[in-house]
Image (tube, rainbow, N blue to C red; front, side, top):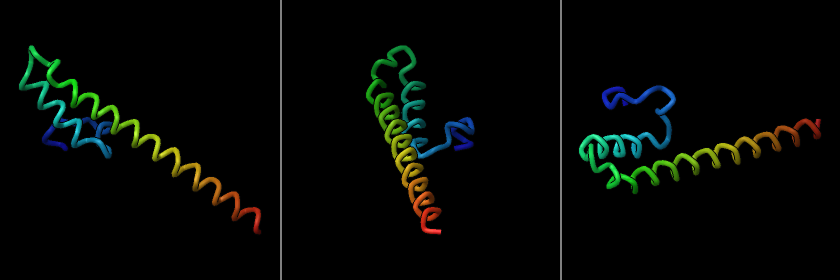
Length: 71
């Protein structure tokens, strides 16, 4: 990821898709419209990752609240 030049906030679960998208943009400089599918794939991956994180956070929050109630 360092060699690809990704910034720290871009190093996440979807970094592999972002690297492919950036490579496509570099190869098709003037015709970057041909990379639209990779862009959409990256956005979908990012949204799915955020949704999963939110669900995991809520699950943990509920489990911790349930543990507090038992005590």
